[in-house]
Image (tube, rainbow, N blue to C red; front, top):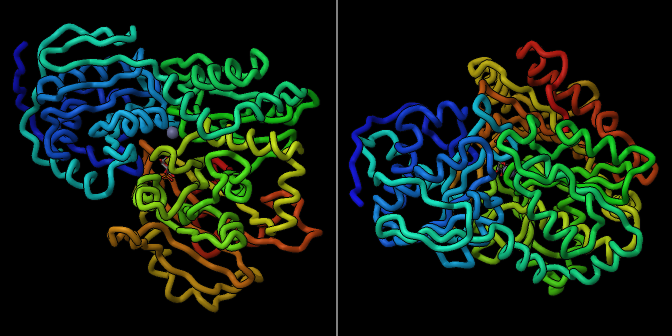
Length: 543
Ligand code: G6P
Ligand code: ZN
């Protein structure tokens, strides 16, 4: 089998964002677009001769075609082995686990996460390193630099490899090993959690509903929750991955998982509800009528982790992204462990996890995970919750009430303004940045600004610095507003406004978040003019 060299030129728009390269699917399908980027990854990581890579994705439209191209390019670039999830399927956390378990040189994960899929929707590709985690900033920069100077790629001419059946076959000199996407991951979960305890809970009348949102977690959740743990058949819904996610938006938040929210607020609500996203790394947790914010979920998991076997000895530390609420900080303080504040993006947790400084990490964007892999992990969060509930035997709402009574409640909400014209969004951010030095001391609608800055982060392990990671305004009395541009969108700009306020008065712990945050919301608008300048009456999404 002959490897051919195809001449190309750099293609605009191949700069990776928060999590690899995300584009409209049709852009990925344009001539040489995918190939240029894949070759740039290979070159950017120093070539792949003799290397082994894990390959898999969330099953969205173009997943299968892209994998065939990647395999042919791997073979042409001299890779020794590709480990591929059957049918091209691997959830992001399962891919991370496989990379680590098999000691490979990394992997390619095909997904645009929670973005919709289909020919007119989104596609994505990212490289994860040998530790199983998203490429560091340094590696990402090298890949991007390659995309700017690339002049050709290598590929073999061959028929499609059969990736539909488990087993090993050859593509030129490269071995293609097709593996069951669920087995290793399910075994890992069984090591971490007390499956017998959870089985006991589920056989005691405790009911649950897991919404896979027509995405990749369907087969994982069926195998683990129904087959191994004994949840009633049908507890996992929308369980068959579909190329366009059933026409939906596989993002587990109250807006996009409205079907689950409706069930959980109805008289027939089960005891526990959860959902995951396109590629299985995000999660949403909801009790009977009780939505748990991702920031609160992180705090609860940190506070109760020792109830699960894997964390019985205690946590080394905890980390959260800067826009995530300070709820976990309060728990960490009580436990006497370190709490790190990183920029948005799971890649920033990698060094802390590798260095053993943090055990559990989480983000307001519905990601929680631990050092068992190097990605956030939706089902892991669900299972840790179930393990905790199996020990505590109390409704989610009661658990939350007790948590807030002990630590106080960080009221929290994120307001998103989507598809804002890029220059309008940049103008809003630039003006706010320029205004920061004059804000301290200013009174806005009854609130006084205490401090204001732009977040930058120095990694405590390798001392790399990430600048311009969000504009922060702190109010006297503990409130905070954070402004950031999303790094995962594919159209225009999305402005995210993160709002938070700590409440410790025991009579004021059961308010609605929007009500509790009203003064902060008003002050954030008065200072930034996001609504006025983007021409919106209200945010497009409130989480
Ligand atoms: C992806 C990353 C997360 C990040 C999220 C939000 O899901 O894996 O780590 O928090 O994107 O990114 P954005 O830039 O859109 O706010
Ligand atoms: Zn995801």
